[in-house]
Image (cartoon, rainbow, N blue to C red):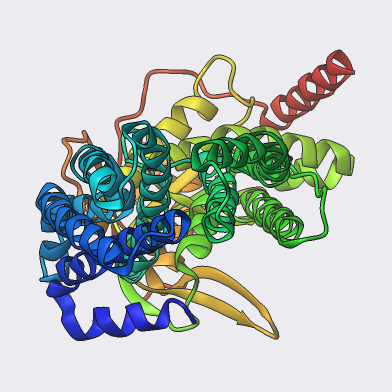
Amino acid sequence: MLLKPFEWLYGKLGPRYPGAFVKLELQAAFLVTAGTVLLLGAYYDSSIGATLELLAVTLALTAGAIVWGFLRIRPWLGPIRAWIDGERDEPATARAWTAAVGLPLMLIRNGLAYPIVGVVLPSCVVAVPILGLSWFDVFPLLFAGMIAAGYGAILHHLTVEVGMRPILIDINRSVSPRIEPGVPALPLRWRLLAALPMINVITGFIVVAVAGADSLGFSILVVILVATTISLELTILLSRSILEPLADLRRATDAVAEGDLDIAVPITTADEIGELAASFNQMVEGLRERERIRRAFGVYLDREVAEHILSEGFSEGGELVEISVLFCDVVDFSSFAAAAEPQQVVACLNALFEVVVPVVAANGGHIDKFEGDGLMAVFGAPERVSDHADRALRAALEIDRAVNGEGEGPGFRVGIGVNTGEVVAGSIGGAGRLNFSVIGDPVNVAARVEATTRETGDAVLLTAATRERLTDGFELESRGERELKGIERPVHLYAPPRPDRARRADPIGAVRSVYARVRGGDRAEG
C-alpha cells in the first residue's frame, strides 16, 4: 500500500518524477525543524511569541539547507531522468540504476553536514537570547539539535529509498542489474544500529520536553545512555537474528553461482527469513534436478541436441535444412557378433564409439543415432553452420586415421559415407516420446555410400553433392558413378587418396584383441 502513491506519481510525471519527488521529500525537514522548536519551547515554557520567533529563524535556515542539499544532489538525478526519458542502452541503464540505488545514501552524505553547521549551530546560538537562556544552555540545545538532525537523516534515507522503488522496479523489467563494488549503499546492520536506538532517543526526548524536567542536558544524557546500553543491546541481538541468516543465504548464493549445487541453507527460524531459506533450498533442489536431467541428456542424447532442447525447447514442427550426413559402420562385424559373447560385442562397440563420438563432437556434429555396429552423425542441425560439408569430411578423415590407421586404434576397420542435401529436421515421435532427427533421401544416400566402401575398398566415400559444398582444399579422387540400392539415379562418388598402409587382414581377430584389452583395463582399474 505504501508504494502505490509513488507508483501513481511516477506514472503521471515520468522524467519529472525524480526531481519532483526529491523536492517534495526535502520539505519534511520543515516538519522536523518545527517539531524540534515546539518541543524546546514547551520544555523551557517560553512565550508563544518567542517560540514563533525562533521558529521563523530556524525555518529560514532550514529553507537554505534544503536548497543547498537539492543543488548538491541534483547531478545524481540526471542519469535517472535520462533513462526514464528513453536513453536505455546498457551503459545508460547501469548509470540510472546506480544513481537510483545510491541516491538515499548520497542525500545524507551530501546534505547532512550543512544542516548541522548551517542550521543546528546558528539556531542554538539564536535560541539563547530569544528564549532568555544562559550561554551554558547552548550545549544541551546543540545535543537536541543533533538528535533532530540525525532523525531527519534517517527519515530522508528511508523515504527516498521507498520513492526510488518504482524507478528501480521499472529498470529491473528491462535488465537484471549486478551489484558491483562502489555502488553507494548503507548496510542493513548500520540501519538497524542507527534507526532503532534513534527511535528510543527521540521518544525519550519528547517525554522529557513534555514533562518539563529540571535539566535538559542531564535528561538528554540519560536518554542517550539508555538508548546506547539497554536499547543497543536489544538492537544488536535483533540485527544478528536477521543478518546472520541473510549472511548464510548470501554465502549459499555465491556457492551456487560457482556451480556448487550441494549447498543448503540452514533453516534456523520459522519466520519470513526461515521461509526465504526454505524457498532457496527448494530452488537449489530444482537446479540439482535440472542438472541431473542435463547429465542424463548428455548420456542418452547427443550433448548438442540436449543443450538445444534445454536452452531453446523443442518444436514438434519440422523445417527444411541443408546438412551433411555421415554414416560409419564396422566392416565384417556381423560375423563376429554372431559368434561372440554379448559382453564382447558391447565392449568392442563401446571401444569404437569412445574414439568416434569425440571426433564428431569436435567437428561440430552430433550423433543422430547408433545403429548396431554403426552410427549416423549430422552436421548442420540443430545448430546451423554453413561449412557443414567441410566439418563432415574432416570428421570422416579423422575417424579413418584414428580407427583404420596403424597404432593404438580400436583394432578393426570402418567404412564411412558422407552425403549432403536438404532434409526435414525436427522432433519426431509420438505418445509422449520425441526424438530430434532428420529425414530425407540424402540420409538414405549416405547410408548406401557407406555400404559401397566394401566394393571400392576405400575407407571414406563422399558424393558429388558434398564435394560441391566443400570450401577447404581437400584432395579427392573420383570413383565414378555408382548405382546405389534404392536410389533411382547413379551417384558420382569421390574418395581421399588411399594411404600407403597395410589393412588388417583379420578384422574379427582384431575385434577379439580389442575385447581382451578392454577386459584387461577393467581388471587393472579393479
